Length: 498
Image (tube, rainbow, N blue to C red; front, side, top):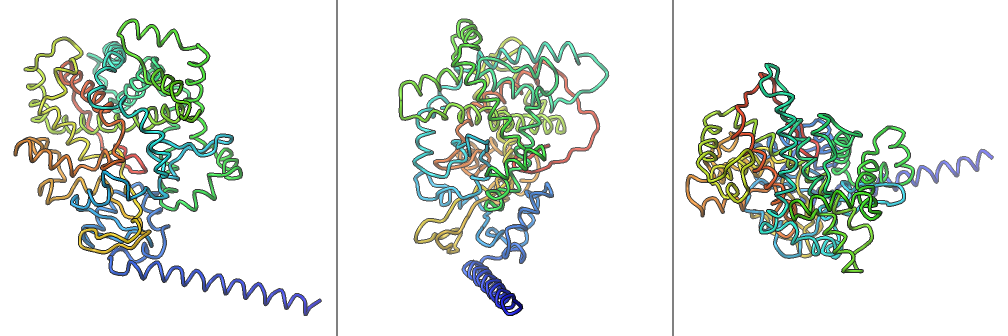
């Protein structure tokens, strides 16, 4: 018996030694092939270090400090290189296939029991699936078509105006404008998508915990995105799902359920009256109507695609738009001379009435500069947009990166490149976008990473800009807004909160 246990012990020890040797060799090989890229020592050995950065809420600032210390290429994980120079954008984010997305994006897929992982246009790695999801709907989000949704946005603006005037206008007490911009963004995207506002503005609060669920989804997904294999073990399976439910961290189930219900209600005719009423009043169809028509016309579109498309609108569209609105308004208020310049431009435009028409404001130079500066200064997404180096390797900023290495840039860092955006890149200054003419503005826009770049640029960019410009113009023209003294702090998980 004792001899048998001794034999088992030797086998176990041998296996552990073999495993240890394997891990040492694997770690050494990973370290060796990127030994020429400088970076924080611990990060070159384990991805848990960058997970810790995200958990601190200051990953965007940590990334920037590392680039200040180590240069424009920094090794931030055993197999991950971050760049800060916008000149690398067309190399890493080309307009043609070649640099697939990394496993980071699998971690930001919502997961539900029964449906599994929900593929979205944003988080799909497989190029064929991405094409399948994006090609049918891309025209709906094109810049030339977004004005068709303006009547739906105006419906929500009227509701916002009514509530603000009733609740706050003339009151000596302040209110949280940032929170109300979130209510507006969600109700606006909800109306554009489903022909019905979900009542956040009317109620003046979160309803059914939807906004809290969005925040929780971002908060829990971001750390896991830095160690994708750990995400698969802890969250993206039946056991992990059960544990997450017990801990109360299954926001994706809540959000997918929200979108699925809206989809099923429309198919069952429950919300058909809402859609018909808005269409009759304004001649505008919502996104869901377009999605269902596309699916009906093309049997090759998966049954789950409309839910995927609506999820992207509701979660990514509403939260990122609200973030840029908050940032832009905050900086306008803390820099009154820029607010005055914007007011003068809007007042001189041909727009009349409480709600400026988009055709009158969409091309105003200073309004455009303020929105771009808000997007640059405080990008909603503040983690590296990861891509995988293709076969044969690639030269990035003069350094060779082997095949399979993950490379990317944090928009927060790239958007502060001093050589591109000026020595004052840290501060809010909308004039940088218009002071040197149209060619210089185009150069800055090509360096702006807030909306992504190349063939995987943000699909909802122009819908978001419509929403942002409509709200900013309405606020600046109709109200004298002043800040209540308070501390402002940015916190980054996946979306950068202010």
